[in-house]
Length: 506
Image 1: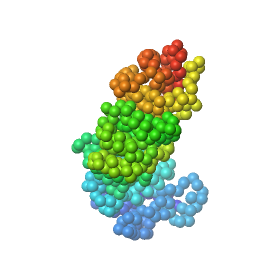
Image 2: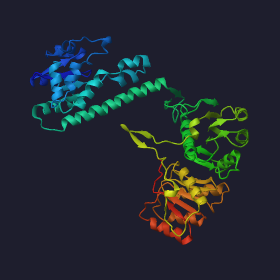
Image 3: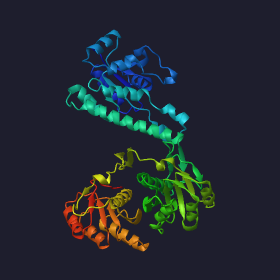
Image 4: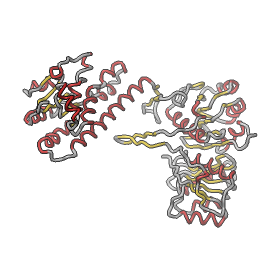
């Protein structure tokens, strides 16, 4: 292996390249270049060696294979301190490549902005560029990866003075970050074109929208059995409705959703209770808000429920494990009602990562469905323990509550949600709304349980709830003033449990 230093340059963005290449030449680098880069260097009288001349292999497949060669990648990847690597390099007559300067094909500009079909878009997917950069980034201690012209001056300074030892790793991190984003753009584009369907518009007219389908048997892939096409908002509400009944999957359940919040929900409370009874209790939790809502259930919808819907409800969409033929006949008479058979509505929720875009990036988090069982809750009022029936009621209310937008309060009684306070800036406001909702629809709060998605910062919520006869409270706990809330419950002989797990939903 000779002492000659090599820099491989293949860039579409030529800004700053002339000065950068001249500086590299003055530092003793021999430049390897391909295609348009070699042409640019010749025009500016900067000496370089063509990649195909260096490897002894011509470009093939219309330029798809240019730099994928052992003499290139061996020169980039070998460990300069590994004796076996050094021997292989010597045996194969491979020269060390100390610098890789590459831009990626501008996929977004060339493809997304022009909305090219996939058959044309694939020709703009860079293979050699990411491969070269990833190889150099992996071996950044020996080969600098450079993909941004803005880094040229920093690289030259480093090569001259070795004044900042963090430069190689910073360049490597940038490469892996940018390539990850580049791959995401490609996968999104191909997925959008191959497994997607356009929606009329997004949350509001004027916003373009589409549905990306990733997995069979889910809401996204569910066939529309009846009714007109679904909207963006329909899918959001259906997803919210489905997630609740999936979380309550231990029992037959129904959820009624309006603007992603439950306005009604009920679970089976006895073996003798019929599917009709469960459905009716869910609807009657807040029948006013249910108007124009979305319904999901983790069982097959029967004719009796269908007739109840036809006579008593205006429903936008229904997601169910299935539909009896007689039920379909009844519901199909309502032309605008969308019916979807969704197998996943009756399957347990598994851990998965959720993403949410923000300005300039996106956030990732695990879902919040690994709920601590009530057997692991902390009883904060040792003298006032709840029986199993009341604990089950609390568990039901807390599962619903963590699917309500924060700040959230849920009042439940006999397996039925009777009051919901959603999306309030103050927790006491959420409780007041829940109590008002319950009274508005004839529900007696006395004997109900209250669930809160976050701790009580003050004792006012507990005092108000107990003044209306709430018989049990479940909350995450963790407030500096927990003792004040506990004392109020102790004084009135009401059990309070801490889940130790917050249920915020933003």
